[in-house]
Image (cartoon, rainbow, N blue to C red; front, side, top):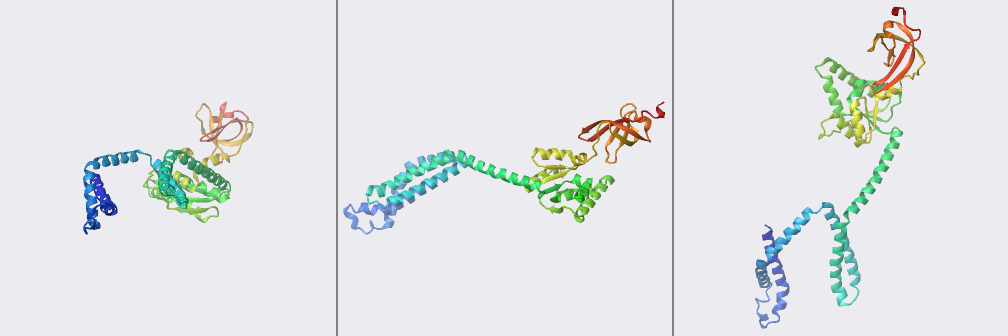
Length: 367
């Protein structure tokens, strides 16, 4: 195909040059008065025939040169070609402006030959500069983009501190239900976002054949209805989805990035995934642990021991907020209310654990 194109180009060039130059060439000979010689069609045919003979020798070198150029261009990085083309355009533009100014000088060499030389030199230099310095242009653009991103992150941080941000709820925090109580207190600001894919997952849970799952799903729907009716942050249900992402957790992370928002959850794994992606997380469990009553060693408490502990003669009691208290020698006080003294407090990822011992020693059952 390329060979045919080159041959056709030779014929077109030959015909054009024949029409332009052959009449002047024929004027040097005595047979110029012949009507056929002055006919442009005859001149075009003669020029095409001459170049047809030339293409018998020049077609293969031209085809090889074009293929070599094609290989070079295909292997060159796309941004190098782009910046090289831009440099060529700039170089030719500068050459055009200089040639326009030189046109006012009435010196044959300057206003005829010099513009051509300028177009060749400046066009070549422009292409080379753009082609070889494209990486520096990209770095400059990337630096400017990074500055813009830092400014945007700063603005997002300011918006987050002011509460003007989106808080995206996941399925676990909706089923948990405590988000509704927190919202009602007024401590939670901004807009609560519930993605449609979370609603779909919640609906599947509510329609489950498993009784426990079905109960959890229906409770989650009731929590959403309460969030919509109670005073507090507004509820936004978005249809934005990510068809190329299968996992709901990753969809939440992508949505939080897109909306420059926060993920609200009590799922430990989602918390870690969001941290890896640099997405801020509000964990309801962390909040619950933070607002539990603060106790210090030596403080007295009144608790009811309800069961045995794992270690020998230990008893287990609970505070109203669910904090577990391990009572030394509490086995002898199971089912009874007892005054205890706190000995130590342990904070774990699962929550706070309090160790204590009976204030007045063992009960009578121990003897």
